[in-house]
Length: 479
Length: 160
Image 1 (cartoon, one colour):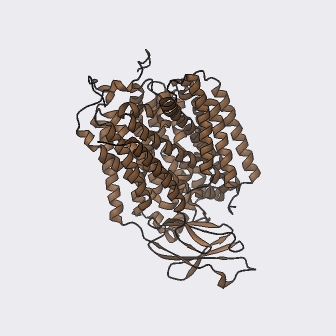
Image 2 (tube, one colour):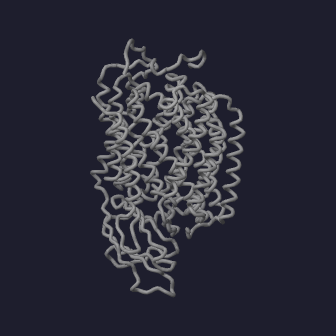
Image 3 (cartoon, one colour):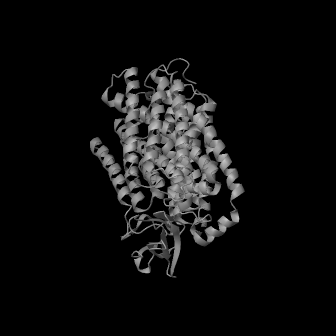
C-alpha cells in the first residue's frame, strides 16, 4: 500500500475500463479493413505523413518517457533529465536511413530481412536474439510501468494493474494488426500532447522554483551538480541506447516499410523534434519531490507520486491518462513488431519456409498471444526498477548500431565481423552494466562494437546492394 | 575467422538469462535484521532502503547518521524510501516503529552502513570523451562517409 496514493480505486478501475473499451473497439474497427498479410503487418504500405508522425511519436513516448525520465532525474539530477531527452537523436538519425531502407528493400518486411541479406545467417541469428531480448525487456518494462503507475496513484496492487494493461493491449493488437496500432497511436498522441502541455502549465503555476532549488541545495545537492560523475557518464549512454533501439528495432523498420513513399524521412524528423521536450517536462516534476516532502518508495514511482501530490485528484487523473495512453501506444506497437519479426524471420525463415500468407496471419495472432503471456509472467516478479531494467537492454541494442549503419551506408565489411561486433559488444556491455553501472552499458557496447567493425572502413567494397532486394519490385513501388 | 554459430547463440542466451538473475539478486547488498538496501547506487549517490512490514507496527521512523548524530528522514506507513543526490561519505540508517503506543528507544533496528563514493571526475570525463568520439564517427558515417548503397553502382559478381 502506498501512503501517498490519491486516486480512489473505483475511479481508477473506471478510467481503465473506459479507455480499454475505447482501444479494443478502435482496434476491431480499424482492423476490419485488413485484407492481406501486408495489410495486417504493414498497414498496406501506404501510411500518410500525419499518421506517420503520430505513430512514430506515440511509440517513442512510452511509459518510460513519462516514468523513467523522472526516475533518472530523481537519481542523476539535471543531466539525467537532459540525457533522457537525447533519445530524440535516435529518431533524427534514423530519418535519412528510413528513406534509404524503403528504397533499398521495397518488398522488405523486417529489420531481420536486412541483416540476413546484408551480413548472412550467423549475424541474422545473433541479431534476432538481441532483438528478441530487447523486445522482451521493453515489453516487461511496459507491463511493469502499468502496474507501478496504478499502484502509485490508486493503491491497487501492482499485479492487478499490470495484468489488466497487458491483457488489454494484447487484445486490441490481435484484433487489428499494425493498422489498428497506428490508428490508436494517433489518438493516443493527441492525448499525450494535450496532457503534457497541461501538466507543464500546472507545473509552472504551482511550483516555486526558488523553493525547489533551496531544498535541493540543502538536502540533495548532487542533483544540481553539473559535474555529477554518473550523470556525465549517462549522457552519451542514453544517446547510444536510443540510437541502438531505433536503428535495430523492427518497431521502426516496420514503420519505414509501412509509410507511403517519401513520408519516412519527414515523419521521423518531426517526431524527433516534437518528442525532445517531453522528457524535460516529465523529468522536471521529479525535482519537486524533496520540496514537497514526498516519500518515494521506489525511484520509478516519483512522477505519479509528485503529480498527484501537487495537483490533487485532477493531476492524478491527468497523469493516469497520459501514462496509460503512452504505455498502451508502445506496448501494442512492440507486440505487433515483435510478432512480425518472429513470424517472418523465425516461423517462415526457420520453421515453415513454405508458409502461406493466411498461415502467417494465423501464426501472427498466436505469437502476439504468446508474447502477451510471456510478458505477464516476467513482469509479475518486478525484477528491478524500470530504469535499471530498461538500460540492461541497452547493452544488447547498442551493439547493433555499427552493423546496421555500416551495412546501409557502405559496401564494406564481412558477415563474421558484424556477428562478432554484436556478440562482443553485448557481452562487454553487460559486464560494464554490473561492474560500473546501468548508465554506461549502452556506451560501452557501442564502443566495443565500433572497435570490431572499424577495419571495415579500410576494406575494399565487397557487397552488391541488389542482393537486398529479394523479389523484383512491382512497377510503381520504387520512388 | 572461425566462429561456431551454436556456441555464439548459446552464449548470448546464457548472457541474457544470467543478467536477469543478476538483476534480481543485485537487490540484496546489505541487510541488518529488518532494514536492508534494496537498490545500491553508491557510486552515483542514490540508494533505496526497505524494511519489513512485520518488523514493527506502522507508522515507522527512519533515521540517518552521517557522523553528526541521528536525524529523522522519514516518518509514515510506507515500507521503503529512495534517497538520491547523496554526497561522498559514510552513512548509517536505522528503523523503528513510530507508533506512540509502542515506540521504545531500544527497539531500533541494528544500524546498516553505506559508503557513498562517486566515480572520479576523470573516469566520468573519459567516458564522456569516448562517447563524443563515437558519436562524431557515427555522424561522419551517416552524413559524409558514403554515398549510401542506393546511390552507388552495384558490383558485379560480389557477395558477402
